[in-house]
Amino acid sequence: MSGSAVTVKVLSYNIHKGVGTDGVTDLERIADVIRHYDADIVALQEVMWYEPWRGKRSHHQELFELLDLPHAAIGLNCRRHFGIYGNVTFSRFPFAAQRNVDLTVPLKRARSALHTAVHIGEGAPNLHVFNLHLGLVRLERRLQMERLVGEMDGEVGRDAPVLVLGDTNDWRDRLFPEVLAPAEFTRHTPRQRGPTHGTFPAWYPVADLDKVFVRGALRLKRVFPSRLALARVASDHLPAIVELDVKLDGATESP
Picture 1 (cartoon, rainbow, N blue to C red):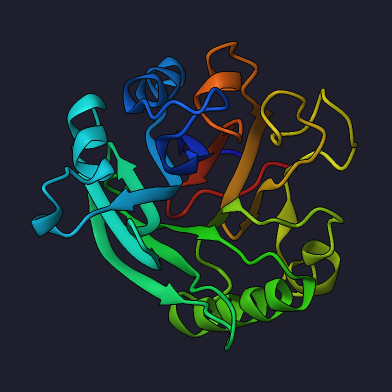
Picture 2: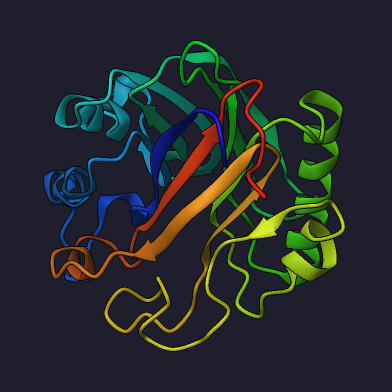
């Protein structure tokens, strides 16, 4: 990519409501894992929010204090008897806009994608980040992703830099060929199976459920799953870390 570009590091992480593989709820070790990678944007799934009358602090509040990332957006989706969990995006860069895209399929658990338009800097287009957590059934996931692609096509267009990432629950890797490739996305997660490439389960990560897809004025530098010993305990998922270049306005691809 010739001309100027802004390099951005993004981390995607299903934190399992802060509950580790040892059954202990500990947000400090979740924060330790995140801080290790010094990401500019952090997309989290299964973050707990509690009504004030419960007398408990919500997880995004605790993590906001633990992480050195000044901007935060939250999208709630699934109510359980103990509270509501959803997606949270933290960022070193400010948000030009944010909204929660409802992806709920009738008769299924509520799901959503948190859309943040991240203002990377002067001369750079907003990076549209869709932080998602999809359903457990194949048809449900396909309907959810088709709805999301339709929403983003109508809102941000096909030339804008778009990053879709999160817990897809897509064990058999169906979403890319069926929905995302026809919509001009590129897949940037390994297709191989085995503990070298996966993010789930954390103790023996054979499945790459936490996927990354891009479209528009972006160039991937690398994607890799965390292999920190602490990450194997902190949640039942491992984080996926993404480094990419956001092309500045007027920059062109090198031959």
